[in-house]
Length: 475
Figure 1 (spheres, rainbow, N blue to C red):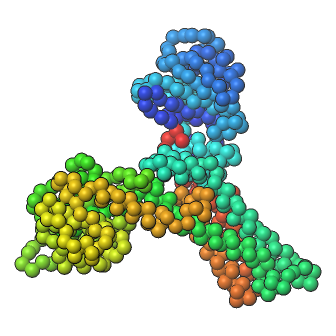
Figure 2 (cartoon, one colour):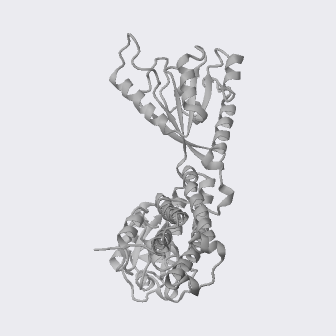
Protein backbone atom coordinates (compact mmCIF):
# COMPACT_ATOMS: atom_id res chain seq x y z
CA UNK A 1 0.00 0.00 0.00
CA UNK A 2 1.48 3.34 -1.04
CA UNK A 3 2.01 6.00 1.59
CA UNK A 4 3.71 9.35 2.03
CA UNK A 5 7.26 9.15 3.32
CA UNK A 6 8.94 6.41 1.29
CA UNK A 7 11.56 6.83 -1.48
CA UNK A 8 9.98 4.47 -4.03
CA UNK A 9 10.09 5.87 -7.59
CA UNK A 10 6.82 7.66 -8.34
CA UNK A 11 5.20 9.06 -11.48
CA UNK A 12 2.23 11.25 -12.32
CA UNK A 13 0.93 13.50 -15.07
CA UNK A 14 1.61 17.11 -14.06
CA UNK A 15 0.21 19.09 -17.01
CA UNK A 16 -1.99 18.63 -20.07
CA UNK A 17 -2.18 20.75 -23.20
CA UNK A 18 -0.63 20.81 -26.65
CA UNK A 19 2.23 19.13 -24.80
CA UNK A 20 1.76 16.91 -21.77
CA UNK A 21 4.20 16.70 -18.86
CA UNK A 22 4.81 13.59 -16.78
CA UNK A 23 6.93 13.84 -13.66
CA UNK A 24 9.02 11.13 -12.02
CA UNK A 25 11.11 11.08 -8.85
CA UNK A 26 12.64 8.65 -6.38
CA UNK A 27 15.54 6.39 -5.62
CA UNK A 28 16.56 4.62 -8.84
CA UNK A 29 14.08 6.62 -10.94
CA UNK A 30 16.55 7.36 -13.76
CA UNK A 31 17.68 3.73 -13.97
CA UNK A 32 14.07 2.54 -14.23
CA UNK A 33 13.24 5.16 -16.85
CA UNK A 34 16.30 4.21 -18.88
CA UNK A 35 14.82 0.71 -19.22
CA UNK A 36 11.97 2.01 -21.39
CA UNK A 37 13.91 4.81 -23.13
CA UNK A 38 15.27 4.38 -26.65
CA UNK A 39 18.65 5.91 -25.65
CA UNK A 40 19.29 4.46 -22.19
CA UNK A 41 23.01 5.26 -22.10
CA UNK A 42 22.46 8.91 -23.04
CA UNK A 43 19.89 9.18 -20.27
CA UNK A 44 22.05 7.52 -17.61
CA UNK A 45 25.09 9.61 -18.49
CA UNK A 46 23.21 12.91 -18.74
CA UNK A 47 24.23 15.51 -16.14
CA UNK A 48 21.57 17.10 -14.00
CA UNK A 49 19.51 19.94 -15.48
CA UNK A 50 19.98 18.75 -19.06
CA UNK A 51 17.53 17.48 -21.70
CA UNK A 52 17.71 14.20 -23.63
CA UNK A 53 15.73 13.43 -26.80
CA UNK A 54 14.37 9.96 -27.53
CA UNK A 55 11.38 7.64 -27.53
CA UNK A 56 9.41 6.08 -24.69
CA UNK A 57 8.86 2.37 -25.33
CA UNK A 58 6.08 0.07 -24.25
CA UNK A 59 8.48 -2.56 -22.92
CA UNK A 60 12.04 -2.65 -21.48
CA UNK A 61 15.01 -2.79 -23.84
CA UNK A 62 18.54 -3.99 -23.26
CA UNK A 63 20.67 -1.12 -24.49
CA UNK A 64 19.09 -1.01 -27.94
CA UNK A 65 19.04 2.34 -29.67
CA UNK A 66 15.59 1.65 -31.10
CA UNK A 67 13.00 -1.06 -30.95
CA UNK A 68 9.43 -2.07 -31.48
CA UNK A 69 6.66 -0.72 -29.36
CA UNK A 70 7.44 2.96 -29.59
CA UNK A 71 4.85 5.05 -27.72
CA UNK A 72 5.87 8.67 -28.28
CA UNK A 73 8.83 10.86 -29.15
CA UNK A 74 9.73 12.84 -26.04
CA UNK A 75 12.13 15.23 -24.37
CA UNK A 76 13.35 14.10 -20.95
CA UNK A 77 14.57 16.77 -18.51
CA UNK A 78 17.03 15.09 -16.14
CA UNK A 79 17.43 16.13 -12.50
CA UNK A 80 19.93 14.71 -10.05
CA UNK A 81 19.90 14.82 -6.27
CA UNK A 82 20.16 17.07 -4.42
CA UNK A 83 19.70 19.74 -7.12
CA UNK A 84 16.11 18.89 -7.97
CA UNK A 85 12.65 19.96 -6.88
CA UNK A 86 12.22 16.94 -4.62
CA UNK A 87 15.88 16.59 -3.64
CA UNK A 88 15.86 13.15 -5.34
CA UNK A 89 16.90 11.86 -8.76
CA UNK A 90 14.07 12.32 -11.23
CA UNK A 91 12.97 13.34 -14.70
CA UNK A 92 10.18 15.28 -16.39
CA UNK A 93 8.91 13.75 -19.61
CA UNK A 94 7.49 16.15 -22.21
CA UNK A 95 5.34 14.25 -24.70
CA UNK A 96 2.74 15.18 -27.28
CA UNK A 97 -0.58 16.33 -25.87
CA UNK A 98 -3.66 14.19 -25.80
CA UNK A 99 -4.79 11.68 -23.23
CA UNK A 100 -3.76 8.57 -25.17
CA UNK A 101 -0.01 9.26 -25.33
CA UNK A 102 0.26 10.36 -21.69
CA UNK A 103 -1.82 7.40 -20.47
CA UNK A 104 0.29 4.94 -22.45
CA UNK A 105 3.54 6.40 -21.08
CA UNK A 106 2.19 6.27 -17.52
CA UNK A 107 1.24 2.61 -17.99
CA UNK A 108 4.73 1.83 -19.30
CA UNK A 109 6.23 3.58 -16.26
CA UNK A 110 4.04 1.45 -13.99
CA UNK A 111 5.11 -1.73 -15.75
CA UNK A 112 8.80 -0.92 -15.26
CA UNK A 113 8.45 -0.29 -11.51
CA UNK A 114 7.09 3.22 -10.84
CA UNK A 115 4.02 3.62 -8.65
CA UNK A 116 1.40 6.33 -9.06
CA UNK A 117 2.26 9.41 -7.03
CA UNK A 118 -0.15 10.45 -4.30
CA UNK A 119 -1.66 13.96 -4.41
CA UNK A 120 1.04 16.46 -3.50
CA UNK A 121 3.68 13.76 -3.04
CA UNK A 122 6.36 15.52 -5.08
CA UNK A 123 6.03 18.62 -2.89
CA UNK A 124 5.86 16.40 0.22
CA UNK A 125 9.22 14.90 -0.71
CA UNK A 126 10.63 18.38 -1.35
CA UNK A 127 9.58 19.32 2.19
CA UNK A 128 10.95 16.14 3.76
CA UNK A 129 14.28 16.59 1.95
CA UNK A 130 14.65 20.18 3.14
CA UNK A 131 14.02 21.83 -0.22
CA UNK A 132 10.96 23.72 1.02
CA UNK A 133 9.52 24.67 4.38
CA UNK A 134 5.76 24.25 4.87
CA UNK A 135 4.91 27.86 4.01
CA UNK A 136 6.66 27.50 0.65
CA UNK A 137 5.14 24.06 0.07
CA UNK A 138 1.63 25.41 0.64
CA UNK A 139 2.27 28.25 -1.80
CA UNK A 140 2.64 25.73 -4.65
CA UNK A 141 -1.12 25.14 -4.77
CA UNK A 142 -1.73 28.86 -4.40
CA UNK A 143 0.25 29.39 -7.61
CA UNK A 144 -1.86 26.79 -9.38
CA UNK A 145 -5.16 28.35 -8.29
CA UNK A 146 -4.21 32.07 -8.54
CA UNK A 147 -7.02 34.05 -10.22
CA UNK A 148 -5.23 37.34 -10.88
CA UNK A 149 -1.73 38.70 -11.30
CA UNK A 150 -1.95 40.15 -7.79
CA UNK A 151 -2.81 36.74 -6.33
CA UNK A 152 0.02 35.17 -8.31
CA UNK A 153 2.54 37.73 -7.06
CA UNK A 154 1.54 37.08 -3.45
CA UNK A 155 1.91 33.33 -3.86
CA UNK A 156 5.34 33.88 -5.44
CA UNK A 157 6.41 35.91 -2.40
CA UNK A 158 5.65 32.95 -0.18
CA UNK A 159 7.23 30.46 -2.57
CA UNK A 160 10.42 32.54 -2.65
CA UNK A 161 10.67 32.26 1.13
CA UNK A 162 9.64 35.75 2.28
CA UNK A 163 7.00 34.44 4.71
CA UNK A 164 9.41 31.82 6.03
CA UNK A 165 11.98 34.57 6.56
CA UNK A 166 9.49 36.72 8.48
CA UNK A 167 8.51 33.79 10.72
CA UNK A 168 12.15 32.98 11.44
CA UNK A 169 12.93 36.60 12.31
CA UNK A 170 10.02 36.66 14.76
CA UNK A 171 11.21 33.35 16.17
CA UNK A 172 14.70 34.73 16.69
CA UNK A 173 13.33 37.63 18.72
CA UNK A 174 11.23 35.27 20.78
CA UNK A 175 14.22 32.99 21.32
CA UNK A 176 16.08 35.93 22.87
CA UNK A 177 13.30 36.34 25.42
CA UNK A 178 13.02 32.58 26.07
CA UNK A 179 16.78 32.18 26.48
CA UNK A 180 16.95 35.09 28.91
CA UNK A 181 14.03 33.70 30.91
CA UNK A 182 15.63 30.24 31.08
CA UNK A 183 18.88 31.85 32.23
CA UNK A 184 17.06 33.69 35.04
CA UNK A 185 15.43 30.44 36.11
CA UNK A 186 18.74 28.57 36.17
CA UNK A 187 20.64 31.19 38.15
CA UNK A 188 19.77 33.45 41.02
CA UNK A 189 19.35 37.19 40.38
CA UNK A 190 22.53 38.07 42.28
CA UNK A 191 24.52 35.89 39.87
CA UNK A 192 23.29 37.73 36.77
CA UNK A 193 23.91 41.33 35.85
CA UNK A 194 20.51 42.92 35.07
CA UNK A 195 19.39 46.42 34.28
CA UNK A 196 16.94 48.26 36.61
CA UNK A 197 14.28 48.06 33.85
CA UNK A 198 14.66 44.31 33.50
CA UNK A 199 14.56 43.82 37.24
CA UNK A 200 11.37 45.90 37.52
CA UNK A 201 9.62 44.24 34.56
CA UNK A 202 10.23 40.68 35.79
CA UNK A 203 10.45 39.50 32.16
CA UNK A 204 14.01 39.68 30.78
CA UNK A 205 14.34 40.94 27.21
CA UNK A 206 10.71 42.02 27.33
CA UNK A 207 11.18 44.34 24.36
CA UNK A 208 11.97 41.33 22.17
CA UNK A 209 8.73 39.62 23.22
CA UNK A 210 6.73 42.80 22.61
CA UNK A 211 8.18 43.24 19.12
CA UNK A 212 7.48 39.58 18.32
CA UNK A 213 3.86 40.06 19.44
CA UNK A 214 3.43 43.18 17.31
CA UNK A 215 4.69 41.38 14.22
CA UNK A 216 2.56 38.29 14.92
CA UNK A 217 -0.60 40.40 15.17
CA UNK A 218 0.27 42.13 11.89
CA UNK A 219 0.76 38.73 10.26
CA UNK A 220 -2.55 37.42 11.57
CA UNK A 221 -4.32 40.50 10.21
CA UNK A 222 -2.77 39.91 6.77
CA UNK A 223 -4.67 36.66 6.27
CA UNK A 224 -7.95 38.30 5.29
CA UNK A 225 -6.22 40.44 2.65
CA UNK A 226 -4.40 37.43 1.20
CA UNK A 227 -7.67 35.46 1.25
CA UNK A 228 -9.35 38.18 -0.81
CA UNK A 229 -6.56 38.09 -3.41
CA UNK A 230 -6.79 34.30 -3.47
CA UNK A 231 -10.56 33.69 -3.34
CA UNK A 232 -11.98 37.11 -4.19
CA UNK A 233 -14.00 39.70 -2.27
CA UNK A 234 -17.72 39.01 -2.19
CA UNK A 235 -19.85 41.71 -3.81
CA UNK A 236 -23.58 41.05 -3.49
CA UNK A 237 -26.19 42.69 -5.70
CA UNK A 238 -29.27 43.33 -3.59
CA UNK A 239 -32.48 45.31 -3.86
CA UNK A 240 -36.23 45.07 -4.09
CA UNK A 241 -37.85 42.81 -6.70
CA UNK A 242 -37.79 44.15 -10.28
CA UNK A 243 -35.17 46.80 -9.50
CA UNK A 244 -32.96 45.40 -12.26
CA UNK A 245 -30.49 43.37 -10.23
CA UNK A 246 -30.15 40.55 -12.75
CA UNK A 247 -29.80 43.03 -15.62
CA UNK A 248 -27.01 44.77 -13.70
CA UNK A 249 -25.34 41.42 -12.97
CA UNK A 250 -25.36 40.53 -16.68
CA UNK A 251 -24.13 44.01 -17.66
CA UNK A 252 -21.15 43.76 -15.29
CA UNK A 253 -20.23 40.38 -16.74
CA UNK A 254 -21.06 41.27 -20.34
CA UNK A 255 -23.03 38.05 -20.67
CA UNK A 256 -26.47 36.67 -19.87
CA UNK A 257 -26.05 34.64 -16.70
CA UNK A 258 -29.24 35.66 -14.89
CA UNK A 259 -32.79 35.38 -16.20
CA UNK A 260 -34.16 38.87 -16.79
CA UNK A 261 -37.94 39.42 -17.00
CA UNK A 262 -40.38 42.07 -15.97
CA UNK A 263 -41.93 39.78 -13.39
CA UNK A 264 -40.94 40.42 -9.75
CA UNK A 265 -39.40 37.44 -7.97
CA UNK A 266 -37.93 35.75 -11.07
CA UNK A 267 -34.59 35.07 -9.35
CA UNK A 268 -35.36 32.44 -6.69
CA UNK A 269 -31.77 31.66 -5.69
CA UNK A 270 -28.43 33.44 -5.88
CA UNK A 271 -26.05 33.15 -8.84
CA UNK A 272 -22.31 33.75 -8.55
CA UNK A 273 -19.64 34.64 -11.11
CA UNK A 274 -16.03 35.84 -10.94
CA UNK A 275 -14.36 38.89 -12.43
CA UNK A 276 -11.28 41.00 -11.75
CA UNK A 277 -11.16 44.71 -10.95
CA UNK A 278 -7.84 46.52 -10.53
CA UNK A 279 -6.17 43.08 -10.26
CA UNK A 280 -8.34 42.12 -7.29
CA UNK A 281 -10.58 39.07 -7.83
CA UNK A 282 -14.25 39.71 -7.18
CA UNK A 283 -17.03 37.20 -6.57
CA UNK A 284 -20.21 38.82 -7.84
CA UNK A 285 -23.51 37.39 -6.58
CA UNK A 286 -26.99 38.14 -7.94
CA UNK A 287 -29.65 37.56 -5.28
CA UNK A 288 -33.38 37.21 -5.05
CA UNK A 289 -35.25 40.45 -4.49
CA UNK A 290 -35.40 41.60 -0.88
CA UNK A 291 -38.80 42.57 0.41
CA UNK A 292 -40.22 42.95 3.90
CA UNK A 293 -42.12 39.84 4.91
CA UNK A 294 -44.98 39.38 5.30
CA UNK A 295 -46.46 41.86 2.85
CA UNK A 296 -50.14 42.56 3.73
CA UNK A 297 -52.46 40.74 1.39
CA UNK A 298 -49.69 38.85 -0.41
CA UNK A 299 -48.72 35.20 -0.10
CA UNK A 300 -45.18 34.48 -1.25
CA UNK A 301 -44.46 31.16 -2.90
CA UNK A 302 -42.26 28.92 -0.75
CA UNK A 303 -39.44 29.01 -3.31
CA UNK A 304 -39.37 32.81 -3.38
CA UNK A 305 -39.49 33.04 0.42
CA UNK A 306 -36.53 30.65 0.65
CA UNK A 307 -34.68 32.69 -1.97
CA UNK A 308 -35.19 35.88 0.04
CA UNK A 309 -33.87 34.24 3.19
CA UNK A 310 -30.80 32.93 1.36
CA UNK A 311 -30.22 36.41 -0.03
CA UNK A 312 -30.22 37.83 3.49
CA UNK A 313 -27.67 35.25 4.60
CA UNK A 314 -25.44 36.14 1.65
CA UNK A 315 -25.77 39.87 2.39
CA UNK A 316 -24.65 39.31 5.97
CA UNK A 317 -21.37 37.78 4.72
CA UNK A 318 -20.77 40.30 1.91
CA UNK A 319 -17.70 42.52 1.72
CA UNK A 320 -19.46 45.00 -0.60
CA UNK A 321 -23.17 45.41 -1.36
CA UNK A 322 -24.42 46.94 -4.59
CA UNK A 323 -27.91 48.00 -3.53
CA UNK A 324 -30.01 48.52 -6.64
CA UNK A 325 -32.87 51.00 -6.43
CA UNK A 326 -35.55 51.07 -9.11
CA UNK A 327 -35.09 54.54 -10.61
CA UNK A 328 -38.54 54.48 -12.18
CA UNK A 329 -40.07 54.27 -8.69
CA UNK A 330 -37.44 56.32 -6.83
CA UNK A 331 -35.96 55.63 -3.43
CA UNK A 332 -38.52 54.08 -1.11
CA UNK A 333 -38.46 53.96 2.66
CA UNK A 334 -37.44 50.31 2.39
CA UNK A 335 -34.46 51.29 0.22
CA UNK A 336 -33.36 53.99 2.65
CA UNK A 337 -33.67 51.68 5.67
CA UNK A 338 -31.54 49.00 4.02
CA UNK A 339 -28.80 51.45 3.00
CA UNK A 340 -28.74 52.95 6.47
CA UNK A 341 -28.53 49.55 8.22
CA UNK A 342 -25.68 48.21 6.06
CA UNK A 343 -23.53 51.33 6.43
CA UNK A 344 -20.15 51.75 4.75
CA UNK A 345 -20.13 48.56 2.74
CA UNK A 346 -23.10 49.67 0.58
CA UNK A 347 -22.74 51.33 -2.82
CA UNK A 348 -26.22 52.65 -3.74
CA UNK A 349 -26.99 52.10 -7.44
CA UNK A 350 -29.79 54.10 -9.07
CA UNK A 351 -30.84 51.91 -11.98
CA UNK A 352 -33.00 52.77 -15.04
CA UNK A 353 -31.61 56.23 -15.78
CA UNK A 354 -33.05 55.71 -19.26
CA UNK A 355 -36.43 56.17 -17.55
CA UNK A 356 -35.60 58.65 -14.81
CA UNK A 357 -32.48 60.43 -13.55
CA UNK A 358 -31.81 60.53 -9.79
CA UNK A 359 -32.93 63.78 -8.19
CA UNK A 360 -30.39 66.12 -6.58
CA UNK A 361 -31.76 65.15 -3.17
CA UNK A 362 -30.71 61.53 -3.72
CA UNK A 363 -27.23 62.53 -4.87
CA UNK A 364 -26.75 64.84 -1.87
CA UNK A 365 -28.05 62.24 0.60
CA UNK A 366 -25.90 59.43 -0.81
CA UNK A 367 -22.50 60.72 -2.03
CA UNK A 368 -21.47 57.21 -3.17
CA UNK A 369 -24.60 56.78 -5.31
CA UNK A 370 -23.89 55.67 -8.89
CA UNK A 371 -26.52 56.23 -11.58
CA UNK A 372 -26.70 53.58 -14.31
CA UNK A 373 -28.90 52.03 -16.93
CA UNK A 374 -28.29 48.30 -16.98
CA UNK A 375 -30.37 48.12 -20.16
CA UNK A 376 -28.31 50.61 -22.20
CA UNK A 377 -24.96 50.28 -20.39
CA UNK A 378 -24.86 53.92 -19.37
CA UNK A 379 -22.87 54.51 -16.18
CA UNK A 380 -21.37 51.00 -16.06
CA UNK A 381 -17.80 52.32 -16.31
CA UNK A 382 -18.48 54.63 -13.35
CA UNK A 383 -19.91 51.70 -11.38
CA UNK A 384 -16.83 49.55 -12.08
CA UNK A 385 -14.68 52.48 -10.95
CA UNK A 386 -16.68 52.80 -7.72
CA UNK A 387 -16.32 49.06 -7.09
CA UNK A 388 -12.57 49.17 -7.70
CA UNK A 389 -12.20 52.17 -5.38
CA UNK A 390 -14.18 50.38 -2.68
CA UNK A 391 -11.89 47.36 -3.00
CA UNK A 392 -8.76 49.50 -2.79
CA UNK A 393 -10.14 51.27 0.29
CA UNK A 394 -11.18 47.99 1.88
CA UNK A 395 -9.42 47.86 5.29
CA UNK A 396 -8.07 44.36 4.70
CA UNK A 397 -6.57 45.45 1.38
CA UNK A 398 -5.12 48.83 2.25
CA UNK A 399 -4.01 48.54 5.88
CA UNK A 400 -0.49 47.53 6.81
CA UNK A 401 0.53 45.84 3.58
CA UNK A 402 3.75 47.83 3.33
CA UNK A 403 4.84 46.54 6.74
CA UNK A 404 5.03 42.88 5.69
CA UNK A 405 7.18 41.18 3.06
CA UNK A 406 4.51 38.49 2.66
CA UNK A 407 1.18 37.71 4.29
CA UNK A 408 -0.33 34.44 5.50
CA UNK A 409 -1.61 32.21 2.74
CA UNK A 410 -3.60 29.50 4.53
CA UNK A 411 -6.02 29.10 7.40
CA UNK A 412 -3.53 26.74 9.08
CA UNK A 413 -0.90 29.48 9.12
CA UNK A 414 -3.40 32.00 10.49
CA UNK A 415 -4.58 29.70 13.31
CA UNK A 416 -1.03 28.91 14.42
CA UNK A 417 0.00 32.58 14.23
CA UNK A 418 -2.94 33.55 16.43
CA UNK A 419 -2.13 30.77 18.91
CA UNK A 420 1.47 31.99 19.13
CA UNK A 421 0.31 35.58 19.60
CA UNK A 422 -2.25 34.60 22.25
CA UNK A 423 0.36 32.68 24.26
CA UNK A 424 2.78 35.59 24.02
CA UNK A 425 0.14 38.14 24.96
CA UNK A 426 -0.81 36.09 28.01
CA UNK A 427 2.87 35.87 29.03
CA UNK A 428 3.23 39.65 28.85
CA UNK A 429 0.01 40.17 30.83
CA UNK A 430 1.29 37.82 33.54
CA UNK A 431 4.57 39.74 33.61
CA UNK A 432 2.58 42.95 34.13
CA UNK A 433 0.93 41.29 37.15
CA UNK A 434 4.41 40.28 38.38
CA UNK A 435 3.60 36.58 38.24
CA UNK A 436 6.52 34.17 38.81
CA UNK A 437 8.80 33.70 35.83
CA UNK A 438 8.58 29.91 36.04
CA UNK A 439 4.90 30.05 34.97
CA UNK A 440 5.55 32.69 32.30
CA UNK A 441 8.38 30.83 30.57
CA UNK A 442 6.17 27.88 29.42
CA UNK A 443 3.94 30.34 27.56
CA UNK A 444 6.96 31.72 25.72
CA UNK A 445 7.98 28.19 24.78
CA UNK A 446 4.41 27.48 23.62
CA UNK A 447 4.58 30.46 21.27
CA UNK A 448 7.88 29.14 19.88
CA UNK A 449 6.28 25.73 19.34
CA UNK A 450 3.44 27.21 17.27
CA UNK A 451 5.92 29.16 15.12
CA UNK A 452 7.79 25.92 14.47
CA UNK A 453 4.54 24.32 13.34
CA UNK A 454 4.00 27.07 10.75
CA UNK A 455 7.31 26.36 8.98
CA UNK A 456 7.27 22.62 9.63
CA UNK A 457 10.16 22.46 12.08
CA UNK A 458 7.58 20.94 14.43
CA UNK A 459 5.15 18.61 12.66
CA UNK A 460 3.42 15.24 12.88
CA UNK A 461 2.90 12.62 10.18
CA UNK A 462 -0.90 12.70 10.24
CA UNK A 463 -1.05 16.50 9.91
CA UNK A 464 1.40 16.44 6.99
CA UNK A 465 -0.49 13.67 5.21
CA UNK A 466 -3.78 15.53 5.57
CA UNK A 467 -2.23 18.75 4.27
CA UNK A 468 -0.51 17.31 1.20
CA UNK A 469 -3.45 15.06 0.28
CA UNK A 470 -5.35 18.23 -0.66
CA UNK A 471 -2.85 18.99 -3.42
CA UNK A 472 -3.53 17.96 -7.01
CA UNK A 473 -1.72 15.08 -8.69
CA UNK A 474 1.68 15.80 -10.17
CA UNK A 475 2.51 18.58 -7.67
